[in-house]
Image 1 (cartoon, rainbow, N blue to C red):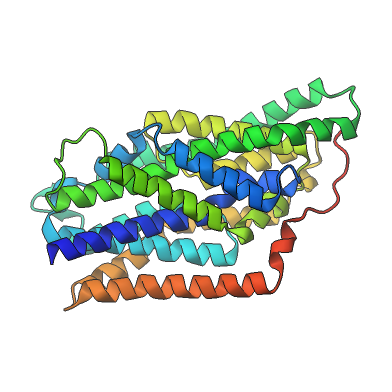
Image 2: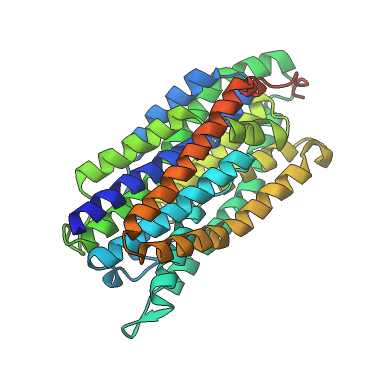
Length: 382
């Protein structure tokens, strides 16, 4: 049974990575698609390729997820694997719910919330005289960086955009837009690379935690096994290729109308912040960082009314509820795993969520809503 449960956990971990790529495609390509710098299909292939490459650059985020937020010594044997399984399913269900609603919520927070919910449901706050949750790690490595990164992204994107506006101040708007459309494949590729550095690591960390719990990996490992790295990178890139068109529309068009220079500024800013946080081992939300960069770049040199603050408010609300909602789902699934045949019931929940999402996507494509990726006519940049 231990081996069967381990296989189930690893399969669900890679499924989460797929939904992460599917859910977060918008992070790296929404702005490039909305400005017509790249076609949707070329954009997802470009992003998928660089997401895959980014997964091999740094492993500090993986270490944080595996060792920095929960007491890994409590995850032992089949019972530990069931807790990990429940947390992953909690994250997957919440990812699919927010995808369906078109909300660019955080896959990182969904994973952390799901794991927190399942662990607390199983152990409470203390087990065998030890704390279950490493609260210092949650605060210093998750909450604080995830708050600081988007707060930094807004003014940084505004400064980058003001610098661009100063450089282009005497140039023709149509020429400026043409140049920045040519530059956007580079900036969106940079963002996709850093997205892979950050988000693929989270699944690697969970897979490594499962291998430690089952006794197949030394707790003092330096990096996840190579097959875990390749599996996580592949799952993320395939999810990115599948595309999350509903969220692309929210990030690329509904927050604010972006011209190519503003899209370039948002991508460069977000990618740079994600590069820094990945090397520090902070599993920040790529979604938060990109959305905030879009807000900052969109507001620079424009009236505040140019930003659709109602949509931005909905995104903020999704950020706030992601950890508790994913935790509730994770806790509920953990209770299911205690039943006879509990692993089967947990997998059934995941299968049902995926089936509903695929059905919703089929309806979405049948309705021709991919066409909403074409941007509205934009005013020239001044």
